[in-house]
Image (tube, rainbow over all chains, first blue to last red; front, side, top):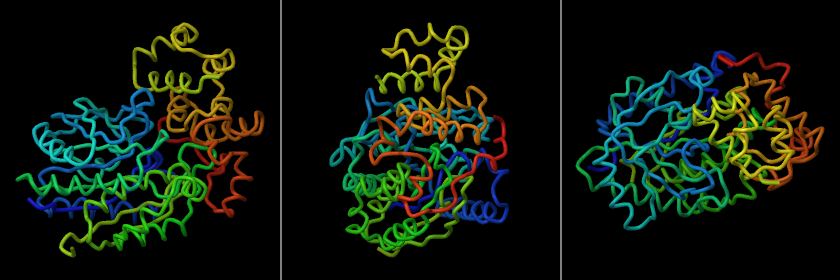
Length: 275
Length: 128
């Protein structure tokens, strides 16, 4: 079936772990946008949720770092972090090994993909699921793009991965939703945690909304690191969704800088009927 | 120095309850299989969050080590700032790509984007 939903969201651990320290109005605005995203995905009829994440050395390390990895299991446990620290209780999220197998097989025709039959979700996936599938009723297929350990996945390959995912999702009978999750500008877990470059974020989101491939792929890691921090490397997840929604136009439903969450909290989606 | 093995140890510690028990029981013995310098062993056993950040440990790994030691979020951020103040810029790794000479210098180079968390203004995070 054609892809039924494509969007992006933030995933910082403070969103759940330090929720009580955030400005209540800003937090409420963001949480409401997350709830709208949950409803939009549910209303799309999605039968599986692909989460394109930028995991943070929870499953993948520099001894064997995949450029792209896709989960291929019937369940995934999380969070790998201390539940009290993250503010999310231990959970087991359903997967769909057979569907993963079919998607990966098709994607491999154009993109080299590693697969993982075991994957413990860190905050990069656990936080979005906390809002988007709070009762874990929707099978999840996790994806990781190397946004952490240089050399990083090239931006153009992230776009190509998104295109491959779209082709694969369109080819299976199930209705697939895809959500990319990452920060835009941020300096997570460093002395600069809480710093947010709002102007940079808004420029990036403008290009993302227009699905402007040339503008999105014109970013480079040196410039991103200088202006948007090492957390900005996670734009790869947003760009992959842009590749999956190639030609569509998008809407930013929420952008709220929340320093204690260490990121400009973002919810956005593409109108897949616009392409 | 061996940033790779310092981070490898922390990666294993973060995800393995068995490793966490071994480290609690005998930190030096838990470090033994890893190719580390005396400085790195000291930083990992005291623990010295500021020195580990100065050595180049990625914050995505380091923040969990701090939480493991029940170091509160604001204190964790301040220890990294103190580490840069005491030991100098980050030596290696992703934060050394464009240099990292402390939050004030960094803010200046970035154009003074506001919003970085002041450690003194950050109450304890839930559960840590």
